[in-house]
Length: 225
Image (cartoon, rainbow, N blue to C red; front, top):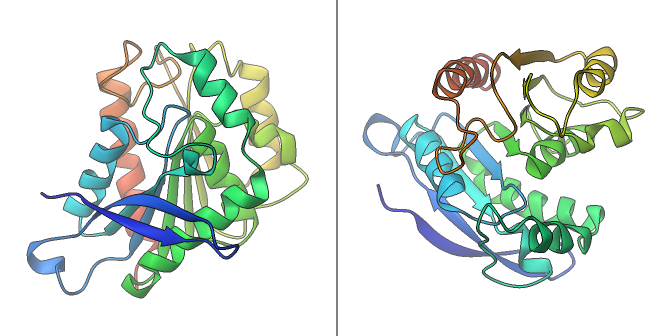
């Protein structure tokens, strides 16, 4: 499958890059819907691009906007470069990030309902996007910052995945989110932060496989035309 790079324009005029995966076969002309993939703090890595490919292969029009373009174009960091990743993330404004996500949503909206899935920082932004009514379904993988806006509520069905060995998101943080959210929360045994990513040492095959099966089922249930 070929991943295409396109340019998006947010509502404030900011231009950002995005990678797009288009469904083939039976869903080529009639996708199941649109999927927006929100990156971790490391940019549009191979993992994020593979997620675009995964959802396109499942019949969705999938897109991953380059969220760090607000700070610097073409940011792709090594997973060990936490300092640069955190410094770059800290320079982002949430309202501007939501504008960039909205641009990606608008691009895939002609395909039907739109799901937003994010990882780490992107997992929290998927939740915040849902709270602002941008999605028809939302999925958050190990999103910690969600605790910062628990007074808001998502306007669509939500799904949350956490690892029980994630020192960045301890059990009490997951419990706070679970108490304030109506969505289904899964905590995966023996899984650490970033457990879905094959490029990271924290990759946990069993949790990755089972959580993705649940994710795809959730999308199938909530994004029917």
